[in-house]
Length: 128
Image 1 (cartoon, rainbow, N blue to C red):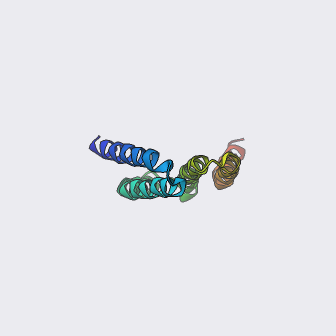
Image 2 (image 1 turned 90 degrees about the vertical axis):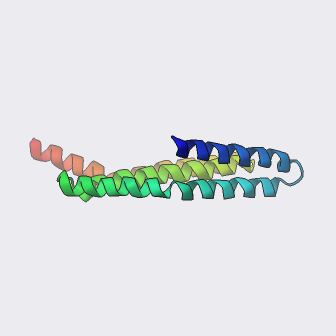
Image 3 (image 1 turned 90 degrees about the horizontal axis):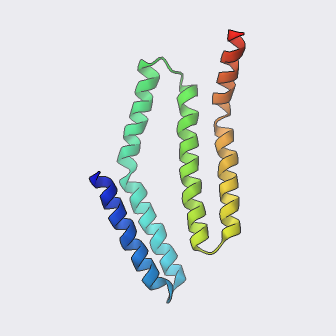
């Protein structure tokens, strides 16, 4: 809980600073947002390591194949990256580019999930 409060405080502080600076220099305001985002993502890297360790444990103990867990993790990473990038594009007043990033993220997430879909299809054909 305290982690999210720190992130929220940092985000609100960066947003307020960006609003103040944006009138004089929109480029600096965008750079401030990108920097704050990078710091927040860096702060969350410890939690990401815990998620990866749990995924590895599920693979080892649960008898799950890495082919099942890996696409889920990749898809989540792609979604996060696309969402952040599209948000920055919108902040830079590039709505069309933001839409393109979101579309690319969707397509890449589907491509990353193909091994999982193939495994499910193989399992279904074996059952039939």
